[in-house]
Image (cartoon, rainbow, N blue to C red):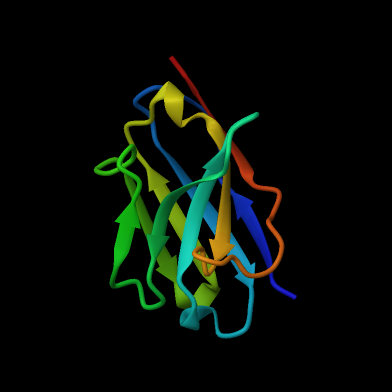
Length: 117
């Protein structure tokens, strides 16, 4: 069964940076695209960023373009989300997913990001 563990969240002031990590327990990690999502209380989970299996192609939600960068290390079964110029509206719980278009396995516990103004 596929599991993911997210880490790296925290409390940061507006304009600050955080780097999230997600380790996935999946065989052939390098065969799957990976993605980051975020969800706040009472809101739907939204896609933030995706990355192709080899890391050559990335895509971002309009709200984070130019500020966030997704990357991966296939040797470590890990995907990252570098978040710069953080805004209070980026406050959410962040989750990663294997094969984000149709997530495989269960959602992890996520990691909370809180941006103070």
